[in-house]
Structure formats: structure tokens, C-alpha cells
Image (cartoon, rainbow, N blue to C red; front, side):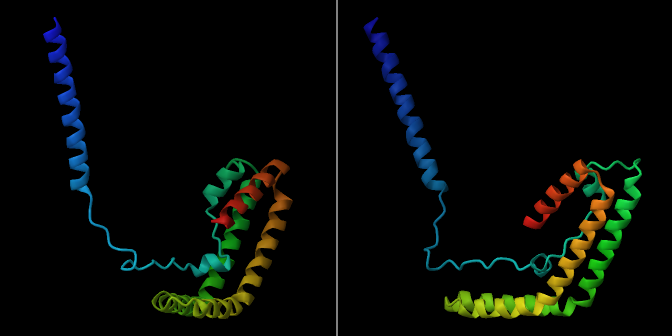
Amino acid sequence: MIKQVLFIFLFFSVFFAEAQYNSQFNRRQSMQPRQPRAAQQPRAPKIDVEKAVGLIFYNIEKVTKKTGIKKSSDTYPKFSSILNSYNKELKQIKRINTFLFSEGKSKMEAAQKEAIKNRDYTALQIANKEVTESFKPIISTIEEKNKKLNLKIEEILSVKQLKKWKKYNASIKKK
């Protein structure tokens, strides 16, 4: 009886030791050598000029679903026509200022590359100020159109739907 207990104890201890040894061995083998911190280049964040300016194009299907407007209701055609006209106006602004957007994006990307290369971020700050100044008139027109959109929508929607619209609009602007 004692021999059997001793044998079982010895068998399980060898079994667990083997399992632990193999897991440590496999873990070491699967590790990839890492580059030192100095060799890694920091990645520059993507620049989305349209988002920075505030161009938000609304998907009518998604907005109506989020605000709770049904297609069968009387407000749906008015709401969709308002959003369609707003999207058309923004597309017009985007088309007119395409050159300015691409110029600003290239200026920011060049400043980012230079800042990462030299590890001096003053050039990036200067470029950011220049681009922001060139975009101010566009931003003001977009904000004006957004205010008009909100006023038109307030006239159509119920209190509950308006609350949902404001919540959805705020969440999109945060992105």
C-alpha cells in the first residue's frame, strides 16, 4: 500500500514537473527578439483634414434609425431632404477647397516627418498654426451651415427625437 502511494506521488510530481518545464521551454522558444527602443521609429498619426475641419456627412438611413424616425412617418421626407441638401452643400465646400485640403495635409505630413527625424516639434507646431489659420474661413462656414441644419431639424422633430439627434450628433463630432 505504501509503495503504491509512493509510486502515485512520484508519478504525479514527475508529470507536473515535465509540464512546467515544457511550458517554460516553449514560451522561450516562441519569443521573438525585440528591437531596442532607440532603433524603433515612432509612428506619425494619420492626418484627416476633413475631420479636423468638421466635415460630417450624414448617412440618412443610420441617422433616421438612431433618432427613431420611421419611414412611414410624415417627418421622414422632410428630414431626409434637409440632410440631403446639407450633404450636398458640404460636398460643394469639399470640392471647392480640395486643393487647400491637400496642401494642408502635405504641409502637416512634411512637418511630422521633420519633427520625428530631428526630435524637435517646434516645426510641427508652426505648421499646425499655419494650417489652422488657412482653414478658419472654411471652419466658420461649416459651423454656420451646421447651426442652420440644427435649426431646421428642431422645427421638424419631436422633443424625444430631437434629444436623440443631439446625442447622435455629439457622438459623431467626438469621433
